[in-house]
Amino acid sequence: MEFSETVILAGLVLALLWLFSVKRSRKYRLPPGPVALPLIGNLPQLQKNAPFKSFVQFSETYGPVMTLYLGWQRTVILVGYDAVKEALVDQADDFTGRGPLPFLMKVTNGYGLGISNGERWRQLRRFTLTTLRDFGMGRKGMEEWIQEESKHLRARMETFKGKPFDPTFLLGRTASNVICCLVFGERFSYEDKQFLRLLSIISEILKFNSSPHGQMYNIFPWIMEHLPGRHHKVFTQIKEVRAFVERKIQEHKETLDPSSPRDYIDCFLIRSNQEKENPTSEFCYENLVTTVLNLFLAGTETTSSTIRYALSVLIKYPNIQEKMQQEIDNVIGQDRCPSMEHRKSLPFTDAVIHEVQRFLDIVPFSLPHYALQDISFRGYTIPKDTVIIPLLHSVLKEEKHWATPLSFNPQHFLDQNGNFKKNPAFLPFSAGKRACVGESLARMELFIFLVSLLRHFTFSCTEGPDSMNLVPEYSSFANLPRRYQIIATPR
Image (cartoon, rainbow, N blue to C red; front, side, top):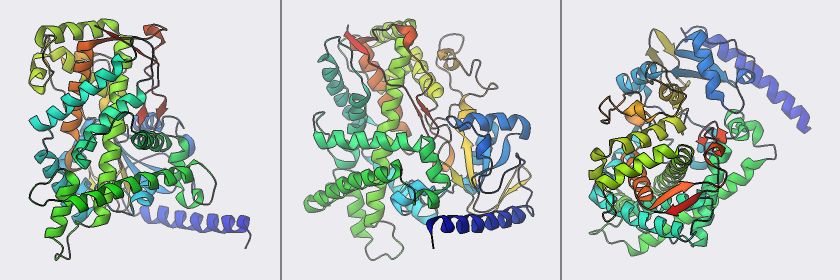
């Protein structure tokens, strides 16, 4: 059979399946939404480069809970703080499912913490949270690692001697080394060629997932698999990262001392040995490789992109940078190393860091959730096998919760006396049972790295503050900031 005939036949089969699924969904009281076309659903109605903005516009017509079809995948979008909190926190058990995102399924085969559900997810999440805490996430031990890494970052920045440089990969190395200490028990030299190669792959993966091409793969994987394109290169690159992780695990197996675990991999191997007679144990090799991949990928690019964005903000608003430096000088001085203890005495600095996260809105869709069974929500039925998107973008930019949602404004996190104030709609790490496991680690990194940098440098660029464009370069799965040459002038 010719390729074109195969495509036509596949199209007819899909059209019939589409009609069947639409007919079936009519027996449910689905949330409202725009009329969808066969096979392509509502895709033509979405902004290609920032689809989450289209979701917000639809919600003005259809309300905060609505049904769209991304291709032929039925998807329920939750818009605004109230709907997102009600689902992820108040009805947490119903919404713990994770969608089988085709890109992630191909990479993981359903193993690991990120994409799994049910007992596998429960065992891996509990273990991962406990292990990360044992190695000091959110505590003193981790803080010392981050302080140590901040010294390496500063030393490298000093070598540029006030000349312009692109901080992208330098910050990637810094953030990744913190994860590497936790997971592999070692940091890598900033010159390590293999380390640099892995970081460039991680950056490529996130760019691909945030491009229209990456979104098309997740919507029509069965078609994209037969077409040429970047996705084939990305999957080959992921195999390279996976091979690196497998080599590290093998090294750990050969040098393991069960009485003295060095890091996450050791703890997993010890637990795996303890449970080898347990047929329902999830502590198998595939779950170890994939969870380490999850942690390595998730903990590198998101944190480094946020720090890079923060530097762009400080260059654009030099008065904010100066005010932070004054506050830091008054509280910490020049001799001491920044620590989390200082945070409560640095309310303006803390407010700026929070506002950077809110304004960048790094994962506007969150990671998609999934209905593992029919869910009743706000008088509607969300049928089993529906993808659910808690639109974090709509929470972080909601007029009801933020005085100037579309402007950078640290006052969002300050009361009238200049004290730090929390805002319940600050959910960059999502919420509920699938919230980011590395939240406290990321918060610690952002604070210590940025305070440390501002104590020692003033940041600028040759074209001046007005040249800084804070609109992300890529906007889809992730909002990735633009790359700039910056100048770090020692203070």
